[in-house]
Image (cartoon, rainbow, N blue to C red):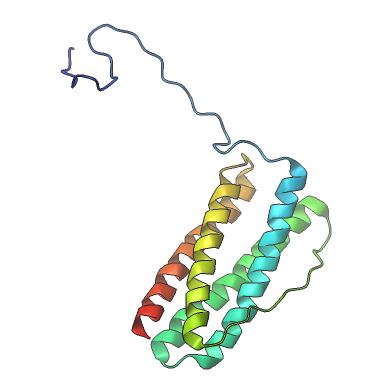
Length: 163
């Protein structure tokens, strides 16, 4: 078979042999075990902080749509907190000890914007952790949290635009 290739496409044609390079895993390069534990610990603190933050936003929600979306994010954050805590215990045999610094905001609208930005940042962080390991339990835990965080960011964006 001879397929026509556009000039300059870099794709060989005819009988020219070429090698496809297999990507190195993990895609972002491996983390050492200490860094992985720090990432899990940081995720625990971030999820606990977000849950506390959302519990306050929930009390200020002006209508049922706001309550529904914030309640959903709040429940997911508690689930992520539990999942990351279990992951930490799996690797260390110990429960994490942490304190949170409550997120401060002046107005409800400012809080919603901070939540939106925080969810996007968390989604990116979780993606990077997921892509820096080959451990399937770690990858799955961070993947599930990442998907939820991006969903929350979308919902907080909708809420922000209604204010």
